[in-house]
Image (cartoon, rainbow, N blue to C red; front, side, top):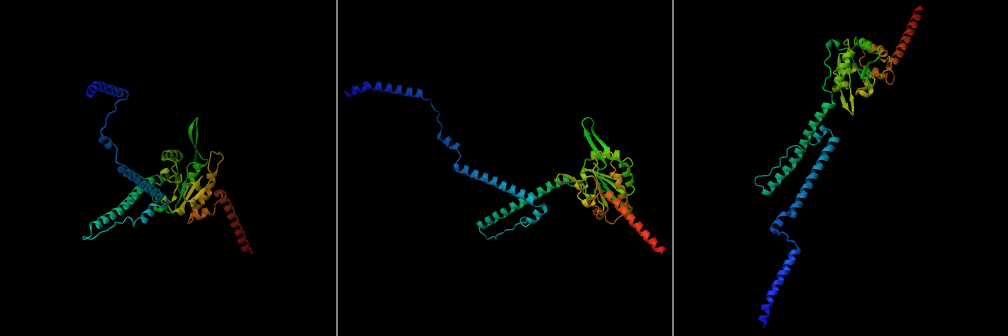
Length: 346
């Protein structure tokens, strides 16, 4: 009996199972089967990832610290100071162990030598790099030669050197849209140059480029009164200003006078400055002509050192002060002559 019932129900159960499986498979899409080995191989081990991150951050931190140290050393110390302070650290380290030492001791000695060599090589690299950079910068900030002028002739060792600025001292350059640049000569500049050339070695020292200075001097100095002309490449660039460095002229500083409308602002040697009024196209200007008596007096009397003489005029207009002193000197001489005459009359 049971066998008869089982034989009749078995086909029906098998058909219902096939129907259920087909309906389930129709509702849910089949997903691709991925091997378990590929899933494992695609993901890096967590320990390796952490070690790589630690190494990366360590290198970044070391480079940042090294850059900060190099920047501070560059700002706070000169190249010579850094060289002297790190000399002991850069000396070769000879850490040796005996032949009978253990392998661990030999390995420790090797690590110590490597640890001391890396900082020394790093400092040497920093010094070489900084020395190279400073040499390149010095080419733009320092005068292009240690001696800007050739040696004086032995027969002219007593001659004073008169250094003249160009802009707003001998000339004035003006620009307007309708006509562009125009250059004007200061009143009396021709007479001034021609007269001073009899007593002085005249040098024009400008902070402009030579492509600007050369054609102006060529048109300005028709009689060849100016012996030498120096342009921007001969100046010292410091704090955004092109300074005239009179110590590089290859002349005795006791015999150098620098005349400029901006003398104290443009020279590194204020003790040699003869400051005059800057010219800005005033038609009745007589500054250069007024200065001739003082400069001629200096050239004729040849003081041992011009710097104390200029210091006695500090804060005063040299031309007008010299006239007053000359008048006072003449008055005293006349009084002495009168007293001397009264003495003989008695």
